[in-house]
Image (cartoon, rainbow, N blue to C red; front, side, top):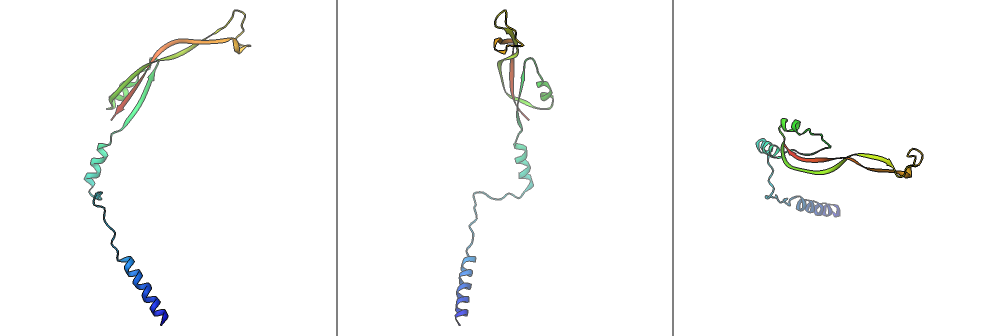
Length: 116
């Protein structure tokens, strides 16, 4: 008899727990149509950032591929360095401490933000 009462109590508890309905979140509905998914894919555009420096310029290749320039920025950059001895009797190969370097050629670095 005790087993039947215990089984009944357990059964009732399980019925009450499983009968609770899970609330649906109506703010975020699930979209099942493929048309809506395709629209979202098309709205996401690709963006890349490329840099060209010291006389290089390959932006025409990107423009021919259909990329659009969103932002263009340029700044001065040192392209090459020149080494020279600090004194007349300095041997740059043996004594690295007397080797001085200074900018040789200064160019321009261009940064492009592109969108396709």
